[in-house]
Image (cartoon, rainbow, N blue to C red; front, side, top):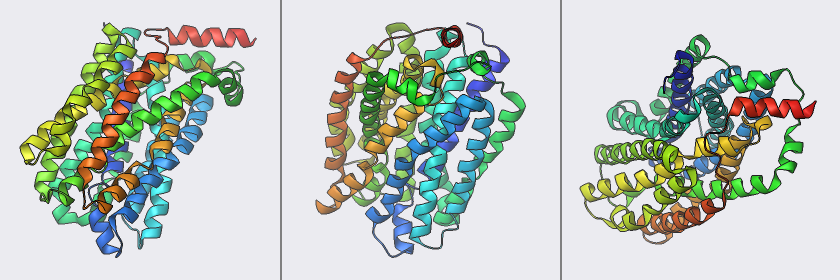
Length: 407
């Protein structure tokens, strides 16, 4: 299976775009405690910033997805990366909590656009047999960003403070130059560009059952990832009273597990099918739960976190390719990103819900996280059985057929 240089460049750009987007998002989860102290408020009030970021992501998926379906994936991706980098930088200058919350909401719009545009560009460009691997790699961008944030927290935080963490988040802007120099437009978009296509609402109406199903599925998926990741550093600091260095090492370990899981199950889905790979990955979470949430030593918690993220991101590793394959061709830059981010919106209550439950139960973050993880692992395994399997469809040919039927 040989890749052209263009196909490699597109995959690298989309992977880095999602990595750096996640990096900018996760920088905040490490410093909730410090922001709360500076602005004389409590952690759940600051955690509301995470909720706002997640809640605004569907708007970003819609805005940037429509731009990408209309003007092309490549230019939209460049504008998108520049936007989220600038908003991250501005967050570091926040004079008060209100300003920070507004900036985190705007950051959510920019963050919500990247995944759909990047995944459509990748899946429409790489060889069909390489999609499973590319999907796993693309989704591994999310834990790669968390991993980078863990390293920055562990190494730089003591010198730069919480504001400096946000200033570091402007660096992804450099990726725009790489995209401009090395990335070509998607062949499937070029095939549809000159032709009249049905609009977003018409297409969604035609595919309303698929749309509702995909949103419900992605709600469960977002509870799975955010329910096991967002408050894990706070759980380690507040419930176990580990120092920043230990927290950093455990989160680095869990993200290595996430990257391994995403790559393995993404590639695995090429052989056993998308649905079966997701089903197996999700159910791995159940036997791992006690080790992950209720261990008492740093080593046992790190082992549990590693295995839990193999399950969570193993299931997630198949999602970019699966959503792109089942998506209507006319709106491929909009549909996967929009259903993903609407699922995110419905799951965005997670951080505040888990934090509030923990605080009112003597800081018992373990129980709050275990309940969410156990329930959604089962829900995902059941839901995925109802999905369509469209492994390996020819997206360029499919796009040409759409334009032919419109005429």
